Image (tube, rainbow, N blue to C red):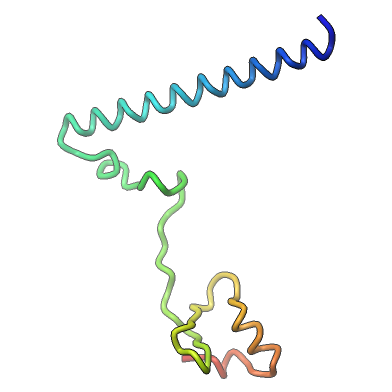
Length: 102
């Protein structure tokens, strides 16, 4: 076999392994969900995790608003995470965070 043939074969084998792993994971999840239903529970009731959330990610509250846009009080920011554009614009125009505090 040529090098290109071998690389093509390796790619097909890797896809087959990935497909097999994904299929087995789905089967295991379905079996776990069925076992939970057989006992009168939903799987999320037992694990405490929603299916839409990535594994290990805990839900955190957004936090109470500490800052508000001076002209539009519906735009708020808790002071955590990335600064909203309106905060950056206000700071660049000469205001301070104390001016925006609630």
